[in-house]
Amino acid sequence: MKNLTICSLAFVLFATPAWAAPGNTSTSSGTATATVIAPIKLKHNSGAALNFGKFTTGGGGTVVVAAAGTATTTGEVTMVSGSTPSADGFSVTGQSSRTFLITTTSGTVSANGNSMAFTTAPSANTGTLSTAGTASFTVGGKLTVSGSTPAATYNGSYSVKKKKK
Image 1 (spheres, rainbow, N blue to C red):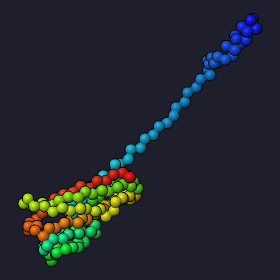
Image 2 (cartoon, rainbow, N blue to C red; image 1 turned 90 degrees about the horizontal axis):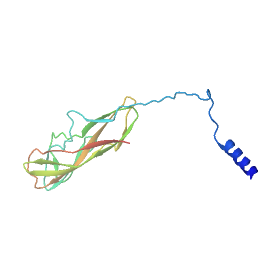
Image 3 (cartoon, rainbow, N blue to C red; image 1 turned 90 degrees about the vertical axis):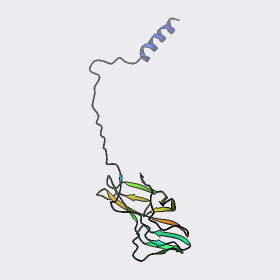
């Protein structure tokens, strides 16, 4: 029993952690950094607009404005001479070389209680900011025209969103 007590005491003495002796500690400092970058901002270009131009309805059809700004018609819709259809324009700014996604919504143009629906399409669904931190894109669309649409100037809007990629 005496041997068992001595063995148990030896085990307890050697199994306990060593007590730190004075001068056996040291400290050091680490470093931390953080970099805040400019957010990606979307801006509508002043004076730009998705303009479907001037046209006659005939029996109806569509007016398609490409992202490049050129227009075509389908059905019996006919563009009027001197009409100036155009794509809309947007600018994007932020930290250089960042990528982003572009989405656009559909909309309606209305006048005097009448309306026409349109869809939109950006010139690109994604973009990358240049080394100067800039990019631009255009938005075209397709307007559906009924043969019974009355003559008037129709106005409306749609939304454009950019998201970081």
